[in-house]
Length: 362
Ligand SMILES: C[S@@+](CC[C@H](N)C(=O)[O-])C[C@H]1O[C@@H](n2cnc3c(N)ncnc32)[C@H](O)[C@@H]1O
Image 1: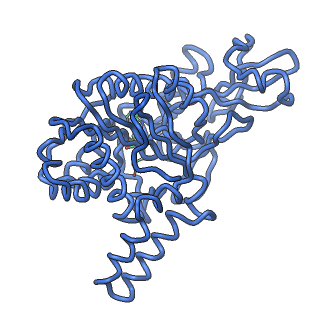
Image 2 (image 1 turned 90 degrees about the vertical axis):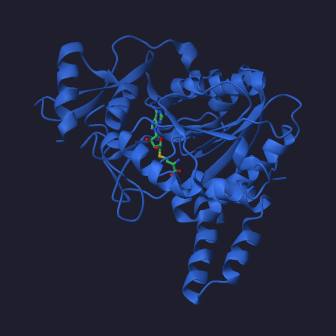
């Protein structure tokens, strides 16, 4: 077992089994042994690859989107440009390079990176050096300064803790993580008390099969509510790209990745990546509840095409070697193909009512 196991064992022995959300929180963000706190997990040699790490074109398209939104806002100076969970900082570096093509954009931008990992903060600093912009790093969105803002988040919500509830013969119970009989490993168990049935969407509460699991994402909803409130009150827009489902559903999506392979979610906590599919319906309800309008979800492929991804790929190919051309085309396919990231990944934009439509897939 991992270093984190001892900390988890101590907490479970003291207070009893923990929620799946607490397990995810510790596994990803324990100050000493959390997965994101101690390593750079991205790329071929890491555990997974994200869209900005596949191609510079992804960040460039988001940079264009940002610059157009900034113009639609009346080119405010300053503009708070915020990224949630910026990973290696690649997306922002590529986005700024594209946005800077718009006159006065770079003078207006005040950059905020919402990141809890010191290891990743150091890598982000390096990635941003060529842009000559110095961001402010903050652990939570709430600490972003006032004024108009554009918020970007790619694969941010999928890393946030979720709760799981399971339907049993006499009602729904929260799923917990406890110690196995020998005390040398972890296993799933269920809370003795019934869960508040209001947590389960009405459409599923009495129709789900016994044993079915519903994933509840309150932290994601809370953060989405904060962002939507700011966008409505101070002007701006937020764009999120993630993989997940469009309507509430039944099913377990918590998954662990190590070296690009799926692995047991309860083995080696802190050494494997944990994610869950995003429930876009829960996110959209939170944004609308805060008074915002939501566009989408649209498939990532269609969104990137509407911003001119094909044209950008063709432009890059004009000065490329044959090998580079194959690479650019491969990246284009990976980002847009329905069999790859094109459909599973979805995009939503959060805007104030009456804002109009920023660059968007039809
Ligand atoms: C799956 S990675 C996505 C990285 C990047 N956006 C990309 O596309 O390459 C998740 C990111 O969210 C950060 N993160 C995870 N939980 C967080 C939290 N509660 N608050 C802020 N950042 C968090 C991680 O450190 C990491 O940078």
